[in-house]
Length: 361
Image (cartoon, rainbow, N blue to C red; front, side, top):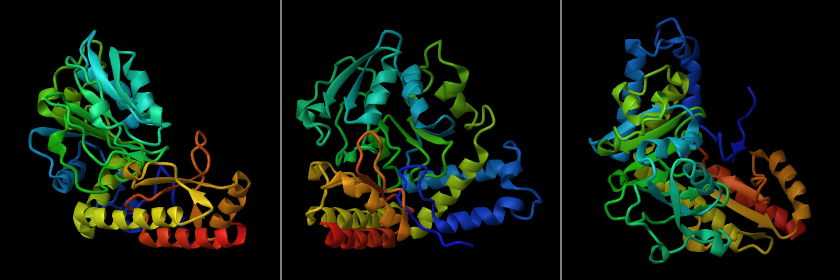
C-alpha cells in the first residue's frame, strides 16, 4: 500500500485515516451481517440504527437544542441556495443577504429567483479582503430571514462573530466551518453545511433547522425540497445517500474520540496560527485578508512572483503535499486545513515554504 500524503484540498477534503480504515473493514461485511453497508436497505433496522446514531452524535457534538430538526439531505450546499427561499421566503417576500465573496454571491443570485433580495452589506468595497462591521449593515424590517456565509472557502474571508439580527431567523452556510470549533446553534434559525469539508464525503448536506420554520414552504416547492417532509420522514422520504451518511457518522464518532469540538478548536487554532505566522514573517508570501477576518480553514496566499507558482507546486508534490493550487478565480495558493488535516501537515508546509523562500526569495 502506498503512503498517504498530506491533502490540502478545499473539498472533497481529507478524511481521517482511522475513519477510512474502519469503513474499509465494513465495506464487504458490516458487523458480520454478510453484506456491505452500501448494500443495505435504508429501511432496515440496521441502517436506521446507523442513521439515528449519526444524528445523536452530531446533536451531542453541537449541543443542538431539542426544538431543532437535523436533516441529512442530498444536493449539496448549492441546492440549499434555492431550497432555503422555497421554504422560508413567502411569495413576493424579502430576504436580507450579506455579500462576502463567491459563495454568498451564488446564494444571492439564486434567492433572487424567488423573491426580493436586499444585499444588506457587501465586502466589495474592501475588495473582499475585509468584512463590513455590523454598524454598516442596512437590514430590512420586513425580511423573512438574514443569510450570511461565515467562511468564504475560496477567498479565505471569515466572520469571527455571529451577527445580531433581532427576531429575524439567521441562516448560515457553515460548509467550511462546522465542527471546527464549538457553535451556539440556538442563535440561528437554520444552519446548513455541505459534507465534503469537515463532515464526510461529498453527496450529502446537513441542515439544522428550528421547528417553527417548518411547514412554511410555498405551494410551488417540490415535495423533495420541503424541509417539513424531510423532517417527517427522518430524511428518508426517498433513498438517502446511505454511504455518505454512514461515513459521516464515523467522523462524528472520531471527533468525539479526539475530545470533541473544544479539542478540535485548540488544534485548529494552532494550525492556522502557525501558517499565518509563517506567511506574515515572509518576504515572499502574502495573505491579503484583514487579520481579524482571516479564515481558520482556508488560507490563501500568493508568491511575490507568479512565475514561481509552478515550481512551488511541483516542489510541494515532490514532498508529499497535494492540492495547494488556489482556486482558478483568484490564483495563487490555498491551504485548506480542515479537521482531518493533521498538524504535521502544516508543519511540513511551513518548513517547505521556508526552504523554497531561501532558494527563490
